[in-house]
Image (cartoon, rainbow, N blue to C red; front, side, top):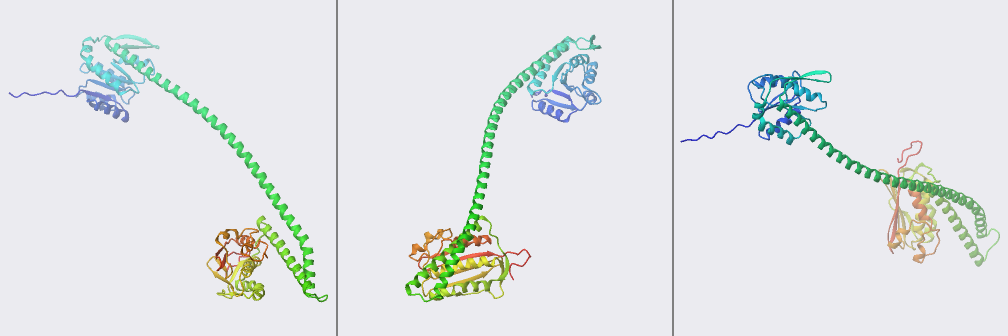
Length: 470
């Protein structure tokens, strides 16, 4: 004998909801809890579906086009074939009239929006459990009631009214719990906000304190800057005045010394000649020191400006070599250019300052090169600058002394048992004059084998728009 096992179909629920989002959310909620679902977008469409299906319940929104939830419920309860299908109204219950109108149309339950999944399922389970009992208890006699000046006819029986009141009460309890939870959360948030406000106030006080300190430091910095500028101006003025006051008597000393040296007022014996030479050497050294200090001060204070002109690089190098050719010959040193630039090579720069740079570097090279040595100048022209190098076969510089070279008053000659003839400002002034042009200066040296001093001069342009090189 073959036995056939009959499986019970899942319960069917009809939903009427005009909002696609709300409709699909409700459908998904019911689907995953093993309910079959039919959906309509309004009351009229729901009535059409009820002609061919018999759900265990109808869940309907109230506000819908064409036929709202109240009209749909009323149509269901007035139809003998449909009136036993429980109707659940989805409402906001914002007004007691909602309850009266629900009773008037014969609704079975209210569910307040927004609703939770667990609450909705409990309503449906309640419908399934009480459906047979409620059918036996129905009374069809309508009773009138006045509310807010309107008369309503209540078509719900006692069980429906009880269900409506219970569902309303449960909804109210649910909302009260939600309100209590929200109130507790709000209280927690308020406490946290108070803590945040206190922390913010503390941060604001700290920020105000920092701002006050920064403002004070800014004022101090401004005052220090002003005082430094004033001191710099005072120093420059002092040096300018002192250089003028010192130059006048020095020029007289040098001039009379030269007259005595030339024996224009009679012959001098060897001892007298030595004294005059010492006076002349010391005077010239003192004058050189004054000039270097004044030039250094002008560059550092920003008062020295470039006087640009377009001139021949070859002629400038020749002139610089000529100034030291006599001293080089006297010391037995070969002085010249290995690879001179083209005769028509021209650049735009401050010619007087370039000559001063060359003189400082060449005079140092001659001074520290022994007899029989060589000092050579080379110039290489690139796209945007010219690089000039002075090579010597002198005593060289120790590696640890290289960083000291271009600082004021750094005289290294005493370290190498040479006569201290300089001011200690030549290389420092050279660096500042090169940087004033926008270039840089550096040195490579091997102690005992000579040195190479190099510097660059970028191609500049005069105010008249002359080309920087031709």
